[in-house]
Length: 198
Figure 1 (tube, one colour):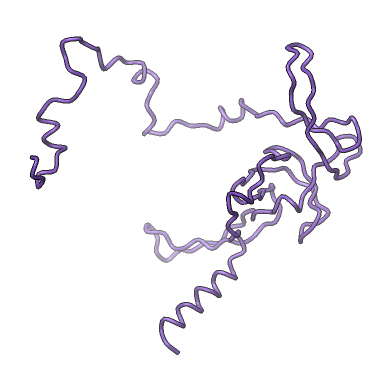
Figure 2 (tube, rainbow, N blue to C red; figure 1 turned 90 degrees about the horizontal axis):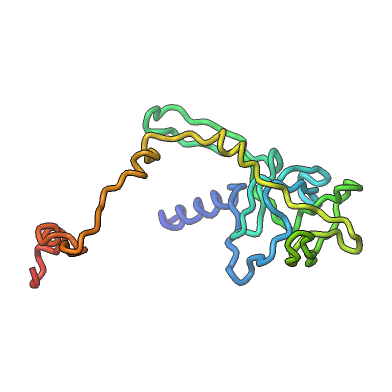
């Protein structure tokens, strides 16, 4: 067998064995109006996790898929790293689930339901707002609120982050007598030394 043909077959076999690979979705086929957002509790309607519920951890809009916490777990092999070439590990991660395989849960009956958006006037401002309702009923499924306190608690400044004191420091003062472009020496450094215009 030719070496190039053997390499091509290996690539094809490895591609089929990777469980986390998701097919490319063309922009025209991507969902434009999402009814499921991060933090929603959903019911899995098909697949190996059928009948289970979970919380949406991430919405992959470019792939029409979702990552659900502790659902559709697959094994990921981690290659040996530069600091320890002899050590390779296996980890369990969530694989994407297509959005057509999940349904939102009715907050009252706790059953999977179909939903649609409906315009509702805000009592305070009078403006129309789009809200999710169970099809054929007046039951609203509110969107989960972002946990800002948890985000602030988890966030840790790294050494590369700019401190607030440095960000507030004034480093440039505009002067009408100074042109708003670098000096000629800096321009000479940026200019191509091999150019005929140098």
